[in-house]
Length: 174
View 1 (cartoon, rainbow, N blue to C red):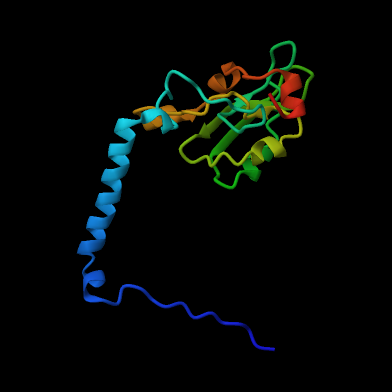
View 2 (tube, helix red, strand yellow):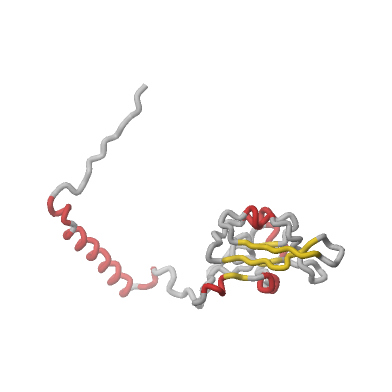
């Protein structure tokens, strides 16, 4: 039984199509038509009110990272390195130190996430056995002029609040 093969005729064989000059003018004419239409009636533009009107984001949307704390204010992370090991972008770096309270054996001395390398896949959240790391901050626009400010450390991860309540986070919708 042979495979069905469909032969598609190749376009662009004439001299004017090979020069691309006419095709460039066609593309520019289409762009100019869109520009004139949008200038006359801008109600169809989707992002014209962006800075003032923020988009609605569901509770399970993966935004910027944060670390959660226990009720007494201590960090939940036990520096098990599961998030660092599971990260495909290798953007998480953790160094551990001994923990002095009775919650676990160790805790993170430093916990850095490079947001320029992060692909926001959420594997770190799935790998964490204690629900210590979350991506529920609601921060979806991360911009700055300095590369160093995209490396967020332990203090910033601990002070970043969650944007949703525990019930919204657990059931998966806002």
